[in-house]
Length: 109
View 1 (cartoon, helix red, strand yellow):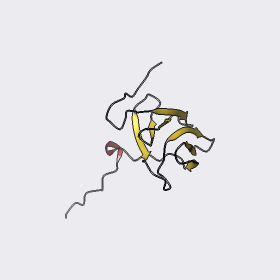
View 2: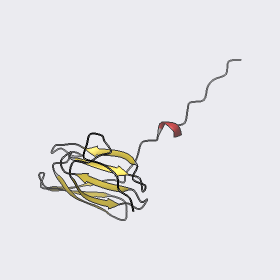
View 3: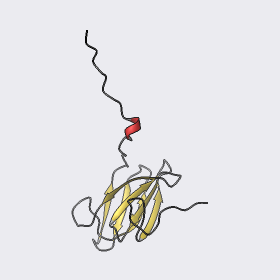
View 4: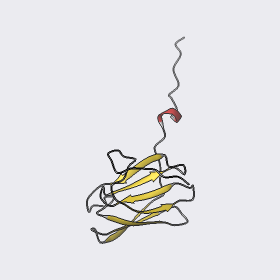
């Protein structure tokens, strides 16, 4: 139906996408083995966020090779180089600037 991403610079692109899973809101979660990242896309393919980073500490990923999402929208990421599976909570995306509440202005009397 459609495609997205490219093998070039940019957070929304890929170097070696290994697996994809879809959460209950239709968001696509893609693991990129070469960039050591987990990327999140809207149902229409628009880039939303990314997390991970190369390493062996909690939250970092070393060669992610597969992803699954359970009924509670927890994300399970298998790592080839890390030799482990990490479980991440439901995706909480930052509020876009256009939707942030602005503090009320005080009016001087």
